[in-house]
Each structure stands twice: as C-alpha cells, then as structure tokens.
Length: 225
Image 1 (cartoon, rainbow, N blue to C red):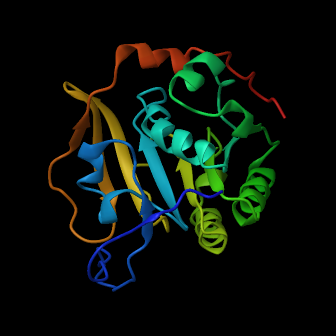
Image 2: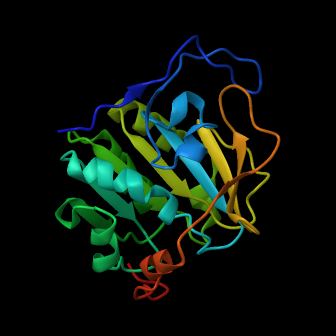
C-alpha cells in the first residue's frame, strides 16, 4: 500500500520565475528542520527532486533514509538506480528500512538509466526512485531530467537524482533542487530551486557520525554494467 502523501496547505505556491502552479502533495522528509523550509513541508510527490552534493559522501543518501523507511514500510518499493556502492544491509535495517522492498539496479549507460527510471516511476506499485548520475553528464542533461520529471508526475511518485559534483549552477526542470555541502554545524543545505520563498540562509542538519557506516559498503567497480 502506498504511504498517503500529505497535501500542501493553502494557496498555490509560486515558482521563482513568477509562474503560478498548483501545490504538490508531499511526504515528510523525516527531518523537521528541513520540512520547515520545504514547500508544503516535505518531499514533493509526483515530481523530481535534484540533489547536488559538492562532493560525494556528504550525507546525501542519509538525507533520504527516513523517506525510504516510510515508503518500504508502507508496502512500496524503493528502487536505487546506479548507486556507486553496494548498500550495507545492517545499517539500512537499523534505520527501519524493509530490505525486501529495496531494489538495486545497475545500468550500462545514460539511455539505459533513463529507461530504467522511467519504467520504475510509471510502474503500478507505489514507491520511490533514487538515481545517481555519476560522472556521466548526459544523465544530468535538461532533456533527460525533463523526462524524469514527467515520469514522476505520471506515476505519482517522488523521484530523486543525485547530480554529479560541480553542477551547482546548471538549469534544471526538477520541481525541487537542493545544494549540499559540509558545514561547521553538519550538513549544509541550500534550496537552489523551489516553489515559493527560498530561505536566504542555508539549513543545517546534524548527522550522527555512526551513520557513516551506510557509506562504508563495497564500491561498485568502474565500468560495471
């Protein structure tokens, strides 16, 4: 059973460019401080969220662990497309994620990655899709992200793309775009694109040090198909 999204309250929110849009339903991120600043109070459902870490391993995957727990416990599938490492089951289980509802997909190139994401997003079962662009900038091309945004809308699912480092200023069709960096007070998050008002100051989330174990999994060899 798909976890019930929470409707964003109030009047339609406004894009930065001034175009009015209907508010999207959301799922809580599991980080109350972050939810205070996200439009509607959570991750948008039926839309693409792009995460742009300054470098890999800052906590970008940790940021989505509460959502994965919510989705998998609700009977949905959490599909990881091209993660750069093999997930570490004990750490994921410790965060409440149902491992039997977690699926890892490795593809051979940009076209295969896009196809896999679109199929997963448009599938009948509820859930979420997380995809990693890696070093292939074609996977972060505007046209490809637009197709992911449309597939998320058609499938009414939250979709996430981890962009390649160095893409902070690139235009994106994603409904939500976050820049991530390491700060003195933990993970530093900037809302690069969102509906409505963007906070002028970055958002800080403290990340427990033991959560680094999630990233201490077997790296997938370069060129793995």
